[in-house]
Amino acid sequence: MSDADLIEVKSKAEFEDGDRELVEVNGAEVGVICVGGEFHAVRNKCLHDCGPVAKGQVGKKLVGEFVEPGKRVEKSYADDEPIISCPWHGWSYDLETGEQLADNDLVLPTYDVIVEDGVVYVDGQQT
Figure 1 (cartoon, one colour):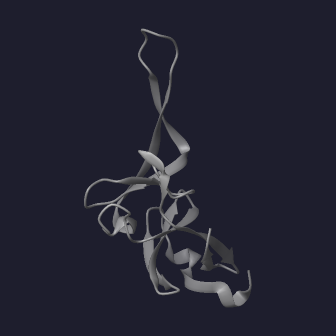
Figure 2: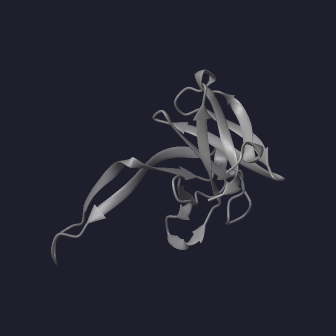
């Protein structure tokens, strides 16, 4: 990655938890989202119907553990696995990997976010 690949978003101090900012990265609209002090960047185009996924609700991934036959699955929310859901039809994606939760063969493009000298940047190369 070179400095030429970095797209400036805004000052880290301007972000609060849950804030998001849209930027253009190589002709594509990308949403930069602050979740728990961590930054994530995803293409703002849902794989289902091209909705503005980066404007959707952010939450925690629901995970379950199968204990034994005949018992209910033990469910909990993973604090370290944030997801985002498209506001149009509810398709949900892992913010780290871009994987669609119902079908991990579908992957929303994600980008690395770099914070340097108090400024938030998106790496123009998708991960």
